[in-house]
Length: 69
Image (cartoon, rainbow, N blue to C red; front, top):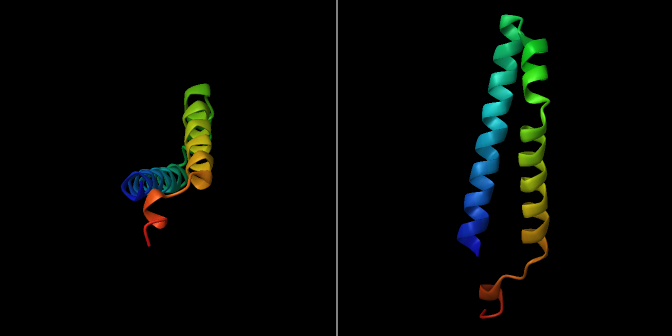
């Protein structure tokens, strides 16, 4: 369970860092409006919702390894 949570955390952190970097690049090159329009689409919103629900589910799941200690 810890490994799955770690992988989820690394993937989400990667998405956050990449998204921030690309948004900063779009601002510096003057293409922020087209970047915002590209990102504001249903597939991106569904992916974000899926990650949010996954994080909530993992937050309420008990770790079976915690009972062993």
